Length: 241
Image (cartoon, rainbow, N blue to C red; front, side, top):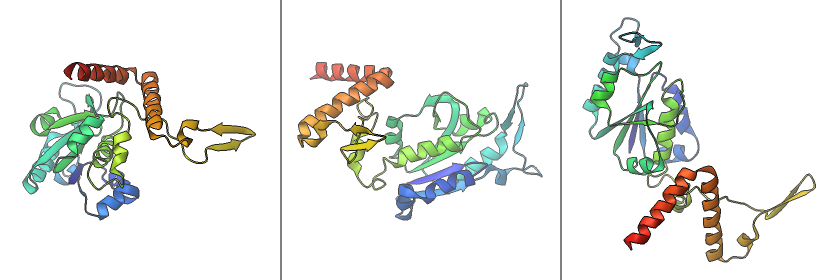
């Protein structure tokens, strides 16, 4: 799988892949990276990229010309390219999107800056637009990294234990149940902190049932919207049987 990043500041992105799980996966050749800086395609004498909005308005936009040139170059060099633009004016990215996109051959993340990107670029190149939340950032580099990380976790060979994906949050519209590690009891400031005793008994059926209950409670408290979706899905499955 291949990922390309179109960014004015590629150094903000590349360092993220130099450590941990993703660094190991990259060394194994599970995925490849490359970077494109629109400044390299600017026709302006000083490589200027931004300009004022037509019709007025606060802030500057990335001009259409350098981005057109950048993305057309990528299309000429590669086949089966899937362009993703990062913008707060889009649907929120979710785990289903991460799983679906992990099957793509080549994803190109286009990172905006300033007040955004000339709309004509999106109209001509965007396959999908995503946001990571209802807030504004200074650029699209962080959202691009968030998407890339989430997608890569679902690519075969990236994670050591693929079963860990089955228990993660958002599977079956539920948040992941609380987890505990050894020791079963530890003390701090003369107070004992004890994990639930059901985990000590070795009854995997009871442990799974307990974890399911905890996941339901956690989802109902933190994400009532997901809890309702979980109930709807179970009801639908019941009537379809």
